Image (cartoon, rainbow, N blue to C red; front, side, top):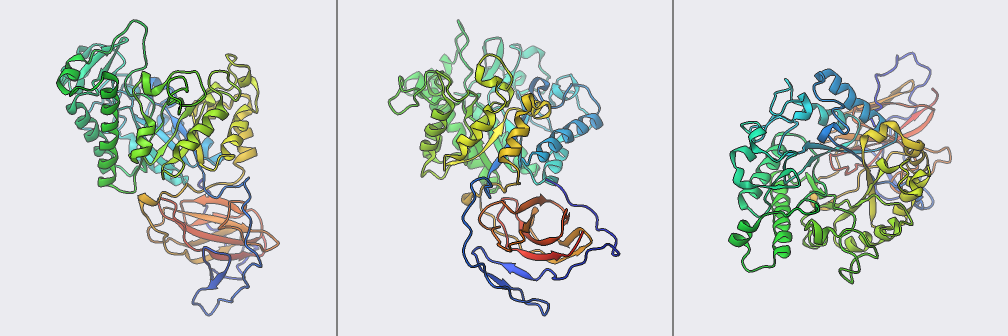
Length: 519
């Protein structure tokens, strides 16, 4: 959330009485910085007990779907300025509710919402496949997210080649038109064959191109691997299976193809930029107990058996940094109870080092296909269920359109009940990073705090110490008032403030203290 503002005039009422001089360690104590202006302050008498209502670290994201202009751009063919304004509107709505990550679809169907030499421009920008929109949206999309302290995850669909089934209608530069032998027609659409090494090589190349050229924070896949079943349709990969199957059963071979791609993307992304996260949002049911005794107590479609997505294998192999299962059913659903699935996924990641976020069906709120979704509190209740599981590190909402329309006031209720304070992103040890330098030169002029930018800092956290003087900023977010990208912040009330530096992975520095007498 970007809240930095210009400094007020020097003649403003409030002045700094204690300058940026107190540096806090990760524990309860503190030690003064080397400055003649510094005075030691006694350590708190007891460590703070974490308040579960205000988690210090929690991923709070929203999916921004570009396919078929679901979320953004709101309509194909709009001007660049209109597209920018609509995107900013989404980000501001997310920031208002203290969300801290966006998952933006940059490759819906072997096309690009960025300048690419490998795939054609997406039709969802201009209305015409392959047409240059006259600007590269991706740097803007990333920069605006970072301004608000949000991570930017680039969302790719690996295997969808086209929403039609004719290569002849694709732009001349489209890989499916250049390599029709890579494709399989299925259900009126065109898919790349996951069993072909050339397809995997191309997908990895496309992703690496984006990782290398743009300042993204993550690479993201959704639930689409082999296509969802269509009555009467067969996915014809017989030739590839004969050539590469090596005696395996067809289903095992297909799952192996997906697992191989996931492992190759994981390796390539982290070799290029170790700090970039890679994760997948699978369909919410891995397998049912009727399919496998270790499956969930559910009766829905099995991703393992129907679309050959084996999330358990990715978790065990450590080829993803996180899983984000799409749990778009309400609590108490007869076939797929939300609480049951949250517990099942929590058990799956336990001890694995793979983080777990939950995909929330915001788009379902207000629908009448299930009575539970007509209740304004269902979504908030689901977040409470997530918080009850130690392994759940946050949630992501589908999708941005409903973030704006706020059906039944559900997102406002979530924000008020669960997101009243900002949160830092969960740390990922394997992705590296280190705490930046402590903010220096902190001062106040009236209500405006400012400080010198810290080397390697992406953002800064601002805390307000309560009147009791009890500093709990290392324990939870009860005193966290803002995460800002600029080295400045305008306070709303007098008091004592702490400022820390955050690197791009949200490793946090020690704190510096600034006191404001009046506003």
